[in-house]
Amino acid sequence: MSDLDVLENVHRLIAASTGAGKSYFVGWLVEKLYAEKKPFIILDTKTKNHIGLIGLKGVKLLKIKPGARYDWQKLLEYPYILCIPTLRTRTADLIEQYTALIDEIYNTGNERIIIVEEAHNYSKNAYVPSPVLELVAREGRGRRICLWFVSQRIQEFSKLLWSQCYVTYLFKMLIPQDVKYVEQFIPDFTEINRKLQKYDALEYQHLSGEYQVIPGSNVNRSTKHYG
Image 1 (cartoon, rainbow, N blue to C red):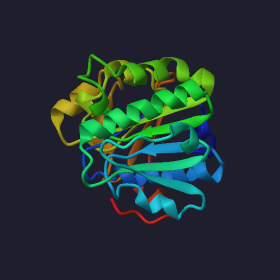
Image 2 (tube, helix red, strand yellow):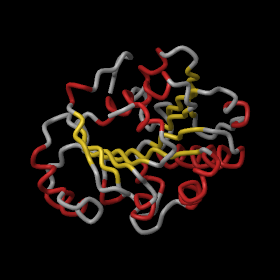
Image 3 (tube, rainbow, N blue to C red):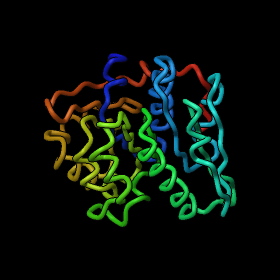
Image 4 (cartoon, helix red, strand yellow):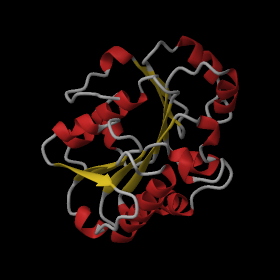
């Protein structure tokens, strides 16, 4: 995979079951963004998932507290941001805060890649997407705003949002129902999935139907991974 592919201004989905190497892979992609000075913000749902990325100089860490109010405009003055919850922050409260932040990013209109962890939690179900995420998915690219959706529950992730993604990264799936579901979006996925090894990542280009397998041995981070 070339750096140009990672830097292309498109929405992406990164999906895998827990423990498949998804967070390590996302961190590797983020390091590529950082190397090319591409502004990003990570909306994490765990305290340690991506905490190693603060080892990159200039990455701003923000801890989201229950009921707290934030000056999002001031936060967005930083080019590289990692948001994490505190131990007392409930998922529903976190999603509410992050939704407001995504809305602010869209309204501000500055270039940014938004990495949305546990993206399935933002929508009621696979058929009713988050209004804010739908807006950014449809209109954000014109403002140089891209969404990278990360999820371990592929069948709960919005179909509409997935349809807006030009690139999908998938790791080996062990649940037959998930494999069958993915084939609605990626033909022949059953055969491709059978050949994937642990920590390998499938990169699928939806417009061309082309794909490649990124071996896990090729994914080497410079920052420490705690996930």
